[in-house]
Length: 399
Image (cartoon, rainbow, N blue to C red; front, top):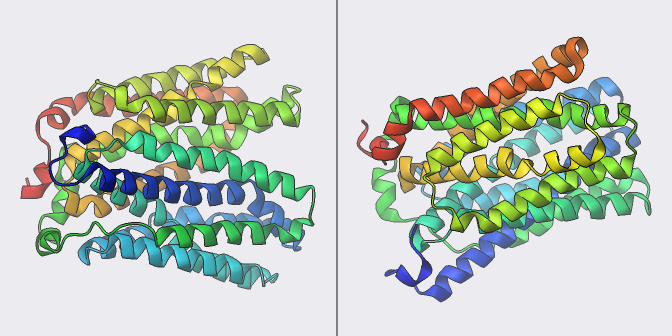
């Protein structure tokens, strides 16, 4: 990628302004996720919703990732209105969570949450597509923009956790809604990037993405490697608790992984390895991480292994975004991100369902299964390496 000093079409001030505003929006987007992911179910329980409805309600985001999400990203691309779509979905998400806070009946909570998720879940792929367009236009690097999302996730979770000690759990929804409102306001500061010249060619060749073997390799590899984390997200804390670790120790282990991820994003502009090699390295690192975690590890070793989250998750993200930059034309980036997220959602959902049965039968042995899953993602990229290394933007011509 170009350095800022090589940019002929935009001043460094414009480039820095874009980077600052995107980083701010990433922060609000993932900061809101940091308040939602650990504490939304706590709120559901606090307002009297039973376990059956909690399970049904919390399944909604996974469903919208491969139903509503591709429709929203495709519409935004056809209208060449990425920024507009981000603004609309951000304000719709905030409104949805504020309305959610006024309801306690399970059916109404389910319906409002389902509609809200139809707008909320497309926000990450829309933002990634918008950020990658700016990365390409201004010669920036994706990692330093995205790290602010990871940092804000930790901050959001910590703030919400502290507030739980100071307020009734039934009021947690207002922290989540307030975080979403901050994101809506931050979306207004995003500068426009859409180009009317792209709009004329936006529909042409869009279907060719799914006929492009290189692009298919990218989304399948991403789904397998990132999807291998599903069992870890679900069962790691349970296993650690059964091993005798306290709540603070478990929280610290999670935070170590996110901190390592942030450091990798910050260092990513220095990487000189081609993106496909980054993904292969990430896949092998993930496989090694899961195989090691299948063992009974002392706390000191487990803490070191947690740092591998930088490679298993962070390096995968950097490598996949780099591949998309080379494989997908700018005017099809939203659609490409939609397909990427939809494929990832399907695989992660299936992995989550299967992991319950596997964990019940094999316990820690589930890590061997997801190690094979991650390794297979690396194999997909390795087999497609010539296509990924030498045929950028093949989909632009429908090839």
